[in-house]
Amino acid sequence: MYADLIVKNIGNLITMGEGKKPRVGNEMNKVEIIKDGYIVIKDGIFLDLGQGEVDKKYIGGSTLIKDAMGLTVTPGLIDPHTHLVHGGSRENEFSKKLEGVSYMDILNAGGGILSTVNSTRQASFEELYRKAKKSLDIMLSYGVTTVEAKSGYGLDIETELKQLEVAKKLNKDHPIDLVSTYLGAHALPPEYKDKRDQFIDLIIKTLPIIKEKNLAEFCDVFCEEGVFSIDETRNILNAAKKLGFKLKIHADEIATLGGAELSAELKAFSADHLMAASEKGMEDMSKAGVIADILPSTSFNLNKDYACARLMIEKGLAVALSTDYNPGSSPTENLQLAMQLGSLKLKMTPKEVITAVTINSAYSVDRGNKIGSITKGKKADFVIFDTPNLEYIMYHFGINHTKDVYKNGIQVVKDGKVIY
Ligand code: IZC
Ligand code: ZN
Image (cartoon, rainbow, N blue to C red; front, side, top):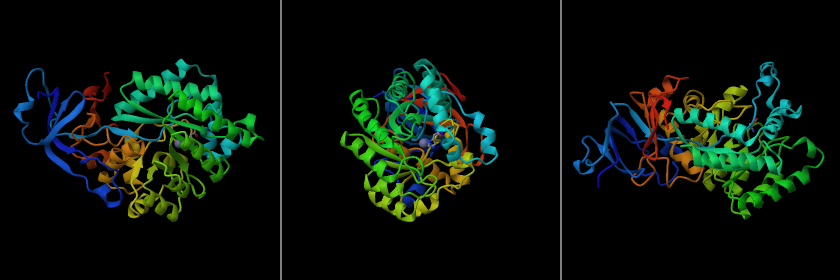
């Protein structure tokens, strides 16, 4: 069978192997690298891969042959935790933050998430679409080919649906694949200030509407001291699970509430943040197969402690990394920065980092059978990095190393510029 595309002369081809399950514990550091590798693509799928000369049987008709000139190739990167669709920005809170006012104090004074809720309620569908599309283009230019996107800036049915509809349309229109998450439990809106239970009822009543319109695959809760308690989180997520939603939790970000333990109890796909997770919580997650999604650019931006990635890996967890792109605690689309902080601050090896943003992040959004590794039969999503090896991506920090990006076998970034 003739190939559509062959990429040859790959200096370091990082495949992530068979990619049949997330990599846990010390498996994260066992990354096979093919020197002088090639990949063969047909109909948007990896048909073959190997070392050295490409088999002639693949070349004929209109086969395109690309010379990777000794550079580094990885699977397309996956960002499994973002608050992509939102209105406005929060630079007006920046000076307060620099003076040391905490994230929670800003929220409790009616700013933070609630400020973005106001902007998102006021924004039209087109405004939200344009802003999120611009962010997706930046993400794509950094080598990201799949993105999880949460709602949570409506806190009313109409605006939550508007956010999710924007994500649905972008999933159709943009090369990046989006995985949608309903985060109705992101904050208590002012109109429900003394009516917590009624707000939780509203979230639970919204679930079947979202299910019926097929607007989200996952449900998530911001489980945090002063936001939603463990019991409230359990109620909401159990209701979601009954309707067939997959689960994620913003867990143990600031206070050690037991979100990690709850994620294990509920068999969530991931527990995210975990800066304050207990050791018992990590052990529970490891036993239950919950992926630890760590967001180091949030720690960096809030000037907070970093999650204990080394301990999590020691305890046999599968770690993923994401940007947490949002207008408050992580206003950046740059997943390569999260990777660099993963090495520099979380002390993850470059091999652990690439595992975290490919195969493990694929499983944390339940796409492990289709993406996350350069494996025969998986989607031909891959990145050519303008670096001589994997280590260089983490070593030379703060810049974009992407040269070319391919989505379903089609080139969408050329020399760092989006071209789709
Ligand atoms: O807009 O502040 N942590 N939710 C929980 C966020 C950060 C997003 C925001
Ligand atoms: Zn978040």
